[in-house]
Image (tube, rainbow, N blue to C red; front, side):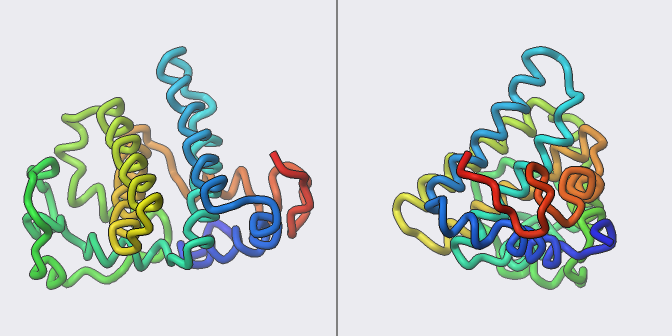
Amino acid sequence: MVGEMSLDSIQKMFDRIYGKRNAKLYSPADLLLHVFEETAVIAESFRKEDHSNVPKAIARFFGWLIGFCNSQGITLSKAVFDKYHGACPYCGKTTNCICISAETKPKAWHRNSGRKMPQFLFQWQTMFADIYGRVNRVAGMEKCWLHVHEELGEISQAFRLKQQKPLRDEIADVFAWIVAFCNRMKIDIGKAIVDEYPEKCDICGKDKCCCPKV
């Protein structure tokens, strides 16, 4: 059952459904542009004050983000946990960090948080809620979403300059902020993905997508 799959298994699922099609029809830049495209749906929901389509857009955002990660040979869970090893990478706190915007360099000792890598998406949501939940509640949904856009811009720069390590780190930051946004919106990311992609393409319904380029 998809709802009980780990983040790694979800990444493999998207690769099984869309991997060959994406490799045939899309460049990595195309995949990244699709990630940006899904953010427009969420931005529109703020403008219209109608968030009914947000869970669907979040699922599609993850689908394209994972497609981009697959094109770069990046395992999403490893990229995220390498940077956020169960704690804030800036101050090392495992709960109630308040230095989320601090202009400091990550510290190596944060890896000793003692927290194991989450598996299921709800566990990732819990981890980030523990670390940043208090400050994100103060920040609000809109500010969380602006941070997503900021980090997407930094992904684009790292990708354009072919900087692999910064690219991995910025992907981790996008994941952290999209999870923060979903936590503020009370969106269960795993359920959103299951609802949109029940182990098959959301358009053609095949377990290996045969849709034309969109």
